[in-house]
Length: 150
Image (cartoon, rainbow, N blue to C red; front, side):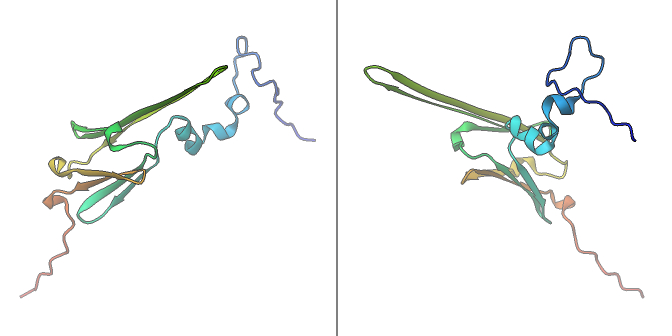
């Protein structure tokens, strides 16, 4: 016979008097995984690709329009935020139906010093916000120069 940890299956347990708190039982172990946690915080998915000349950043932000975004560079940090809202109301003789939604996010990316901040370009198409971050000339990878020995 082996010993097995006892788990009290009451979802809230006795939080006031207990010195131990099992977050897996309380929240469910899947809630703490990064993918689900980021979704819960409305943080958009992000892809970063480095090429020889630039960094290409893609941020998935469907449901927004260009005017919803606020993008700034401040002290070497790319700040991206967006917010939009929608409301709809239908009034009839015996009822009123009103729906509304609000969606927002904020993302900050620390830029490397090798980026030309004045040449950052952005575009938004098909729900994806894309940035092209051009590298400074000295940061670009150069092919090795072969030196002949005399």
